Image 1 (tube, protein in one colour):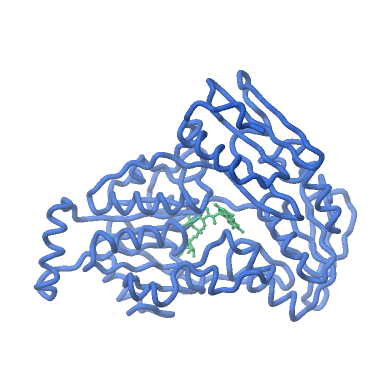
Image 2 (cartoon, rainbow, N blue to C red):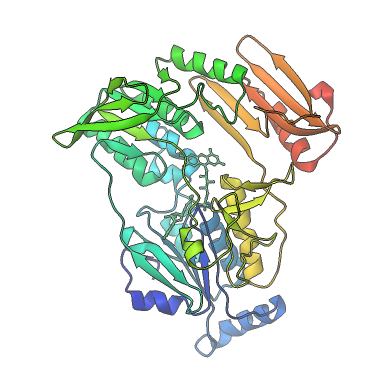
Length: 437
Ligand SMILES: Cc1cc2nc3c(=O)[nH]c(=O)nc-3n(C[C@H](O)[C@H](O)[C@H](O)COP(=O)(O)OP(=O)(O)OC[C@H]3O[C@@H](n4cnc5c(N)ncnc54)[C@H](O)[C@@H]3O)c2cc1C
């Protein structure tokens, strides 16, 4: 079976005989109850080819079918051609790249462009997919190596979250069919601003609302935020700072206005929430796994959780920052993929060390761009800070012991500069100050 909208529980339990991997984004784990060395595994893999019917197949179930989940599945397939590899996800769509949701909303990319596992690749990799609400895993029983599924729930009419392909498809649908005129986007972080930028493709008046005094207050400094806000304004997107939504009003089931924390009302006929998300650790907690004080699942360098039979990776874990060495929440596509691969290595007994997350963010919106990494907003004492300002650009570099510990580049499209910063900060190489233009 390659693709299934509904799979009986009996089948799922059977799939759990050997391993479960959980990649819920907001996480992923893996169970194992049988350990064989790589050599032994290769041997039995070869044997599998000749005596397929006599050899018991390894079975892996991955909960989550996104960056970490699909990377783990493909890596497992690479290790073991004969195993059953299944990804379970409560999203109903084929696995897709979340980083491209903005382009999908703006109509610049189609589903085909953002899909990361199309039917052909799925068949070639021989990965089973179980997708849809019914595939939401509500608990894991580590002792029995079983999972329990349930169905999902819907939101009020006209109110949307901006996180998944399904969210964006619903937003698009609403924009086309209901033709809203006034849209409020709550949250002025990366996703909120990307979403507001994509809305420029529609004939709507957009207001971004944030409880902080400026956009991107966490990942950008004051000067950078000012530049972004000026570009936003030029594009006709309003910004309401120091405000949050206290109440939502509906008429005939449709949203009509919102009450803000200042006591003002704002007429809106569509509300999009882009307010970040909590790490999805409830499954892990329920399975008795150790949770880091930062809120994610605790893993070691091979992505193994506190239960040696369970692995985790993706947005649900806490990992080391490759630049600072600090424990951080993992929130990047590339990191999630790498963690999935590292976990797959561990699961086949071929441990690989995860070097750490490189937490740089890059985005383009409102005709400008931003690349940010490290504590640019609040540089720790003892760090050398170099700033360079242009008319519409702002750059800031944080240096310690001749190494780049953070950078912020707003309004510059200099790819070679960004490439250089990436290289030296990841490797810890000595920085060449002449390159910091
Ligand atoms: C709008 C948006 C834009 C982004 N843009 C960028 C970007 O430009 N660059 C970048 O590096 N990163 C970006 N990110 C972050 C990046 O997408 C994530 O770091 C990455 O997707 C994490 O991958 P993951 O595998 O951990 O899980 P996710 O992508 O979060 O996927 C979680 C998976 O687990 C499944 N799942 C969760 N719980 C259960 C359950 N109980 N039962 C069954 N299935 C479950 C879900 O259905 C899904 O398949 C963006 C994120 C968002 C939301």
